[in-house]
Image (cartoon, rainbow, N blue to C red; front, side):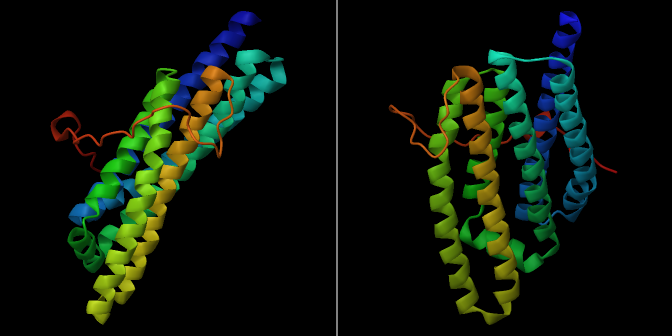
Length: 239
């Protein structure tokens, strides 16, 4: 019985990591589609959202099964509680990635994004998503705390870029429709960062049995530094 319990937990953890890796890639592709106007990449993100949803359901059912067949306590119970929340956060990040990817079809939105320096917020947000997954995989609460510290930077960039987009719309009224779409996309990027923060909070809960929601991180914790994507390490998926 205990061996089956361990196997179920191992499978749950493996599926969560697979979910996180898939969603991280969705975010990376969605941002690249927007910044480059690559509609083929946007199509890929939209098509693969179904995979995210199916994996979400599998994880939920597996958590329900473990609860039904065992009586988890202490760390095992924390893992199950965290798994439910982390899975939900990844699924929502996947949904936001689809919204952002659709902006690639709007050439004016792509042009405005380039003019106002959208790459700054996409890099910071991508780094947060990757680090939150790495923190979960490595059971690393310290890395998770750096994710929390980075969220303020994304919030600041959202405000700054919103103002810049509105400036472009005022200067050229033909950009209003695309500018509004881009502001909505910008808000969804900020929501991706918020969800990555929630994942990091759950990693801290899992590792330290400490609830940090809506609280400032204690101590001197520096924000993450965005990494340059390694284009050679991952080829774009095609049809």
